[in-house]
Length: 277
Image 1 (cartoon, helix red, strand yellow):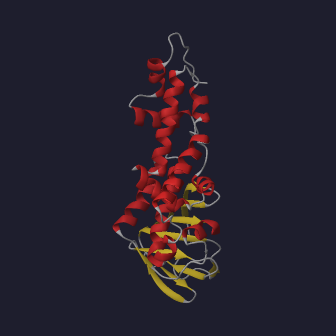
Image 2 (cartoon, one colour):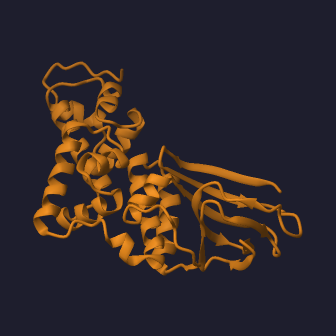
Image 3 (cartoon, helix red, strand yellow):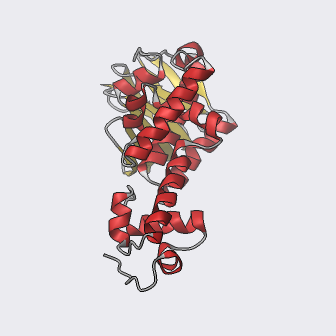
């Protein structure tokens, strides 16, 4: 069966792919154990799953929750289909489920919120969003799905008191100020909070998500460096944690309204020599 798999995010704890199956064979696939925990979110078409002997119909209104070790096989009675695949490491699953990586059984039905969230995830990946933003979106989507299966467990890791939430948010801001290269998982470990809960309480406290805050911090630092006379945009991009100079240009242009090359002229000391290296 021809499968077109486009990797959108590939990290130690998260893997996200856009998968399109064309011209699948008739009948059931070979019975195999699931080797990962994953979410299969159908966007188009439908297929049938036989999971530990129990059949499920999977269509764009459902999310298949792949549980590690379960025996599974699939059939595609209506031809090709397309889905978003989200795979999480065991520590990431445990962080989402109150410290226990055991995933409850059950079929999850999508909501308009989850249907939009998975498409925004793939759209932002196509637009060149960095891995921090994609990880934040992917973790939030996984938490949304798992909340339908185990709401109390997902909520159990959230700091309960206002003072605790403020402490976590301040610690996250301090950690980002010290190292803009931190990934979402690393940041969560730094402040002792799961990435999902960290993202939620950060947004509630500051009014914006971690990825947007991080970009705003990076742009602010870029403006200061340009004011001080920095002319090497590629070096600036690397030091501020951007993927490359083009990424710096996109983010600064979108946030500040002008590209860094123009800002370098407007803000830099008189006589500074422009350079791109």
